[in-house]
Image: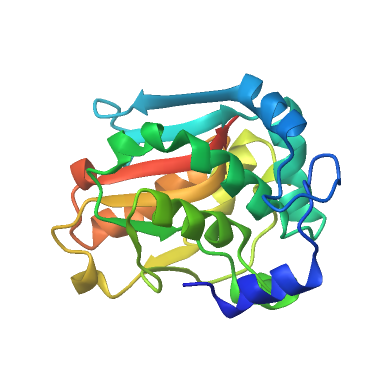
Length: 221
């Protein structure tokens, strides 16, 4: 089902390839699709034996560099929500890579603060996650993890600052909805992993097992 936000984005922004700007009904031209193809690098990192991680594994589609990096930066910080359509269009042709994600039951999107949601008008991660959820397919559960205060963007901080920046920022509720489920936490970019690790920690504190938590991001730094 297309959300009101998606309808609004589709109405305001024409169907263009966000990479080159050319009109395209799929929001991705063949030339730019081939460029992304060269960067596509689906992989899984195993954290089952890593005691510092609150999740068992991390799935990602790209390394955070070159073309996909510029797209994600524009998407997050330059008010270009329509870029989610270009990325989603590319991933539609990669559904064979989703087989290993089908063991999960639900997707939970890393939330943004209420203040930022109002300012931006959308959670950029949720737009892409909604499309990926349709492809796998998985259900998106909302209102499970929420952000209790606004923080500085992680990208503006060093490694130590990023770790401190996410502490006591997230809380979890409505845990009965996800008990005995395998959960995939989605975010757009994985750098230090502090954000998703803190979100996973909040689920574990509510009784969810680490073995039932995985991470999915578009790119890994």
